[in-house]
Structure formats: C-alpha cells, structure tokens
Amino acid sequence: MEMESGLYKEMDIHRTSCINNSKISPNVYHNTKLLLTLYNKVLWRINQSLDVVREDCLYSTQKHLDELINSLVDVDLYLSKTRFESRLQSIEESRSIINLVDKALIMLKSHPDNGERYYSLLYKAYISPYKYSEEEMLEYLCVSRSTYFREKKRAIRLLGTILWGFLIPKLAKELKQVYVLEY
Image 1 (cartoon, rainbow, N blue to C red):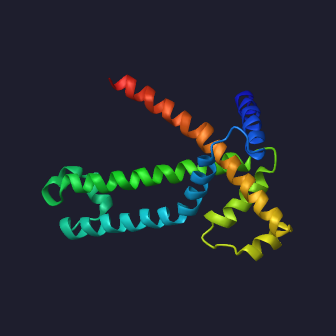
Image 2: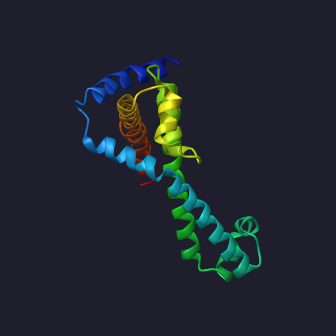
Image 3: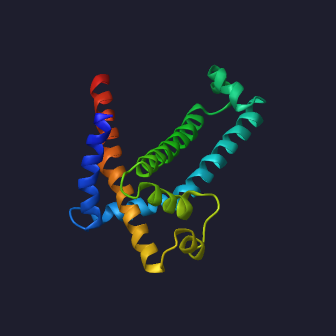
C-alpha cells in the first residue's frame, strides 16, 4: 500500500506536467492515442490469427490446436515449425501490447484525480466494442463539446504518463534484468 501511494505521488507530479503541457513529449500523447485507436483492430487481428493457426493445424495435422500444443513434437511432422513459431510469437507480442494497455487503463481508473471518469471516457471512446458517438459521450458526461475534448486530452495524457512513464520503463528494466541473468 505504501508503494502504491508513492506511485500516486509520482504520478501526480507527472499528471500535473501532463495537464499543464510541460515536460512531456508530444509523442506520448500521439502514441497513446494511436494505441487506443488501434486497440480493437489488434484484438480482431489476434482472433483472426488464432483462427488461421487453428485452421492450419486442423488441415495439416487433423488435430485441434489444443491437442497439437499438448504434443508439440508433432509440429515438425506436419507444419513448418518456424512458420508456426512465428505466428504464435506474433500473436503473443500483440497480446502483450493489449495487456499493457489494459494494465495502464486499470491504473488510470484507480487514479485519485478523475481516474474513474477518465477511464470511463477512454473506455467508451476507444475500447468498448460499441463505439459511443460524440453526441452520446457528451450526453453521458453531461458536458459541452469543448469540455469533452479537453477532458479526453487530459485522460489520454494521463494514460500516456502511466504507460510510457511507468509501465514500459518498468517492463524494460525487468527485461534487461532477465537478459543480464541469461548471459
């Protein structure tokens, strides 16, 4: 709990700089908005890729993907191992990005300053399978159009700070430690 409050103190410093447009790369906002925009397309791609892998497995091996994974020794006999590994690796990388965005959204939701509101705004605007129209968002939030866009921008900036300022550096540090341990 103490670590969590320390994180919020750090986030508050970054949030203030995000809202005041200082000390933040313009790429953070742009990249975060791009990730949000692509979120559902990436989920769709993951599902489609899994379907293709399932169909390839069934066609080539007459086994379902689950059965094939349980007996990976059979992969060499029926499928190109590198092609199979490449497809699974691509799916895993895409899933990792989605998980990172999901984790950042959960952190955003628990943020003490408008976290729930910002989460709800971003979820309804980008993540939900049902895309809310601008009019529906204005009605839902009970705000003017200019206030909606201002809050949306703040929400994206705060999410970007969480993502690029905390989660990704933490992940990079963990990966670096694993790399050092392996070699």
